[in-house]
Image (cartoon, rainbow, N blue to C red; front, side):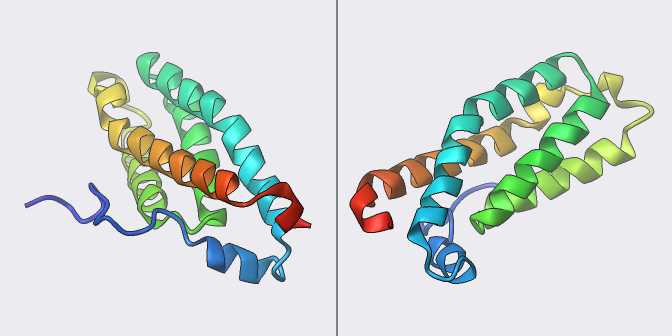
Length: 133
């Protein structure tokens, strides 16, 4: 039996309606946040992968924290849960984490982050700029 945070059940990855409500239905602001996430996605993934390959616990804690914060904005619950779980494991192994394959351990979070990226990209493509002002 798999953990409920390991796979998406086919539903939406993000809750963009919640984001819009919190922004006072300001679609331009929502679009700017989406664009920032899309622009930063490659760097976040690269930073996470490099820190994992280097067994750099401190750098991993920093990037996972940033990832969690970004995903909270979009109510990407699976990615947030995976980030929290990884943050906990990193905290527990901050002194003795060199024997852990952090690249494998962070794979689920990287996949969830890609899912968030893909959904936000679709949102951006379906929301013409003229509709966002």
